[in-house]
Amino acid sequence: MIVYNNGVYCPLMQAAASVQDRGYQFGDGVYEVIHYTDHHGVDEDWHLDRLDYSLAQLQIPWPMSPTALKQCIRQVRLKNNLSTVNIYISITRGVPVTRDFAFPKRFCPPVLTIIPYRHKPVSQGLRTKGMTVITAPDLRWGRCDIKAIALLAPSMAKQSATEAGADDVWMVDDQGFITEGSSCNAFMVTQAGEILTRPPSHAILKGITRTRLIALARAAGLRVTERPFAVSELNDAAEAFITRTTGFVIPVTRVDQNPVGLGQAGSVTHNLLSLYETFVQEQKHGHITDTTRFAV
Ligand code: PDD
Image (cartoon, rainbow, N blue to C red):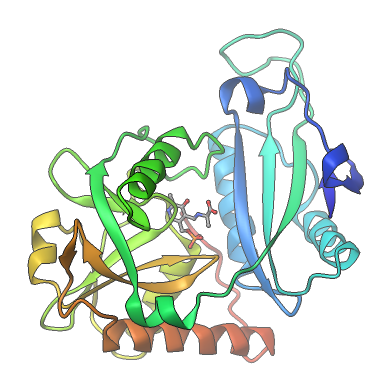
């Protein structure tokens, strides 16, 4: 596999980082994951807008222009002969002259890495059976709106799910409200068919898939309300699901071992996935030209 690492395309095994990179010592960096279908990046510009936001929040300069970045990503796809793939992009602050907690005063060239990961389409089984999740306290920091590479808390959460035999964790804030999944946004559907998801804030990552899906659902006449929902509300939920770049829309059929609704994938989730898949195809074929910017 060929990756892009700090100015060069090279085999993955040869791609190395400095032990002094602040990404390594402080978790000081940001990332994005973009899904490409037949070389079309799904909402690619929105991902780059969110990358711009994450970089700006941490005062990390762009390593190159967004247009040049798109070209590098394209080269990685071509060199690996992968047209349908998930592309991981990370930008760390780089190697400062000395180790200091404050950001370096002198210019420190950021380090860009682009790695392709094979795309595993969501299986038919998962689409019908859905995922199981457990709930756990949200142990993350106060700026989850930044897509930071420091992922220890969600990693520990996911590990606890794995040990419990579940597929993921839905994290819960101090008031008992779901924030989001370990690497996805969380939704529930009420018995009245209203779709609920937490509004954007510092408590969650404003997902690209989430944002697109809300727009598609509203355009289709569905009722979407952005408000936090409590773990206890899931007892009365008709359906639940998650969104993320690498899986689009996936039903959640059990929370803490209790069935959600009938305990199987529901029609609202199914319709939303269809809407999203149709959108991906239409955007790929250039039938949708959305020039709006992604505002976090
Ligand atoms: N994760 N919330 C968190 C904490 C995430 O890490 C992600 C994405 C999402 C969904 O965002 P989007 O729809 O833009 O993918 C929400 C990526 C896929 C990852 O870390 O691999």
